[in-house]
Length: 177
Image (cartoon, rainbow, N blue to C red):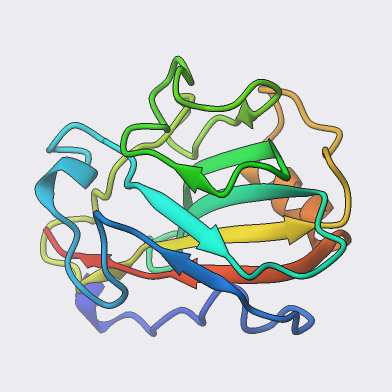
C-alpha cells in the first residue's frame, strides 16, 4: 500500500466531548495553508507565533500543543506540548518552542515531543506521503497548572487536560515533503 493511500485520520478533537471554541491566530501560519520551510524539521524546527483571545470565563491557565494526526503511526505524532501557561499569557512569539524555553513565561513546562527532544520539532512527513495536518491547539483550562513535569508524555498532558478543558482553539496548517 502506498502511504498516500492510507485512510485519513479523524480530526483529533472531533471525537472528544464538545467544548466552546475561541480565536487562535498567527502571523506565521494560516489555517489550511502550507507551512513555511522554517517551521519544518528540515528548515530548523522554529515554532510559529500564536495569539489567542475570547477564551471562556473561568479560564485559569492554558496548554498549547501541535499534533499531526496523519503520521503513519496508530497514535499520530506530537510535535510540541507546553503546559502550565498562566492566564495572563495570550501569545507565544515565533521560536517560543526552542529547547531552552527562553521565550516561555515562568512556570511553563515544555514536554518531550514524540521525536524524543524537548520543545517544538518541525513538520517532517515521509517523502511521497500526502499532505499532513499540523493541528496547533490552545486549550483553556479551569486550573492554573496540571501535575506535569518535563518527563511527562504529551499524551499524558492531553489526558489530564481533557478533564479541565473549558474551551479550545485550533489552527491547522499543512505540509507535504
